Amino acid sequence: MRQSKGEHEREVFGKFAKAACFFVAPGSVRSVKPPRPDISCRLGGVTYYFELTRMLHAATATRIGGHLRELSTTGRAAPLGLDSYDDRAALREAVKRKDRPKHEIGGRPVALLIYIDGVFHPPGMLSEWAQTILNCEGPKTHWASIWLYDVVRGQIVAKWLREQPG
Image (cartoon, rainbow, N blue to C red):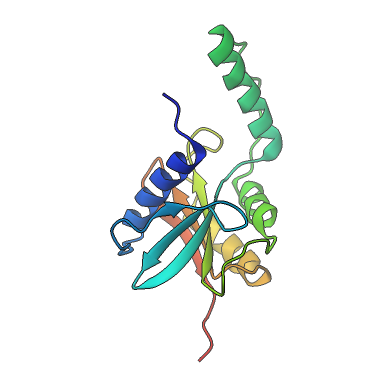
């Protein structure tokens, strides 16, 4: 049986929170509907929001999605041709794609969680590349923090945290 979007996001978030060593209040992780971000939870007694997105190149994802759809409906599909893929461009694209302050968050912190799932993006991005991009792109965004999480390897690849005043 196929997972719903909310179930998938809660599963990814749960794995991420464990890898990040977050103490998430038991039972506080919830899928919320727009205009709120994807996930709401309580960390250290404070409500936090997380917007989740897969790391991918839109054009490559469209090709892979069509291929997977054909496989699931007919049981077979012609092999995909070669494709060049740039980790760095995919990460920049993910940050820019989601950087529209459209959420109602009531003044609560909101973070962007970009995840590598091994379907639309191969695991194993170099941490140094990712960190350089987050350090460059993060200050231009509205996010309190940006995280890159590799679901396949179960590790945080890079993170950017907005400096708090004071």
